[in-house]
Length: 110
Image (cartoon, rainbow, N blue to C red):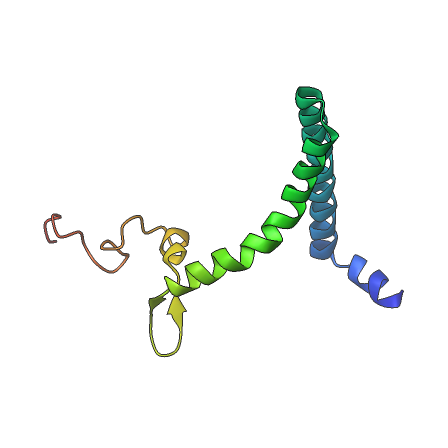
């Protein structure tokens, strides 16, 4: 209990905890709302159960497959490090030929 109290004294941790609780509450309300819509539209408890199974288990089943696929697409960087295609997007590079250090081939020089 002492560790929890110490963690709660940290402002950033409290903010992260509050955002996590709000996120989980939103996910829960969204799942219930979607289940009610499916039940109201189909009148089938089976369709509602399939919806819950799909939303809970498919991400866990498909997640590793998708991650493995993206990992195979990783581009070599330097040494043993690898760079994923999404890294360029995070750095703001829209085109793989255009980077912060290079000009586009059609762009005139300085």
